[in-house]
Length: 162
Image 1 (tube, rainbow, N blue to C red):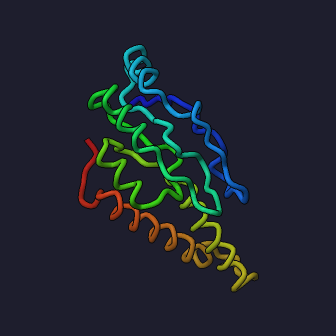
Image 2 (image 1 turned 135 degrees about the vertical axis):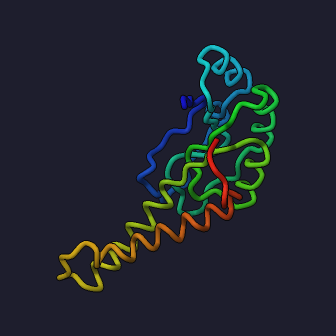
């Protein structure tokens, strides 16, 4: 499956930003650009920029531009849409974008945080432990918990990819 990205999503998925991350209007996906890109490339899915960014802001990620997503949806018809940089997005925004055709949401930063924080905790609890299957139990469990919560939020339980 081929997917492309129109607009600027930028930043780094391995960072949690201590300062507010600025999203500029000119970086958002323009509906006409999305439509043209799909026609010219024949991609299967399109990742859009609607206020999302890779990584997370410690103060909370900004609200998504739902109006812009509605405009993109109108321009591209039923083309499946993707949300790169979905970590830290408010649940109400996630639910809204799914209703408008977002079929894939990347949450890598949230998974990295769950894994890294509990790995540090696990190693801190027993710094002499050298057996990975022992100190990795908590991090793997933490990632599973985030994934289970996201599956529920996304309404993806018991669904099979097409």
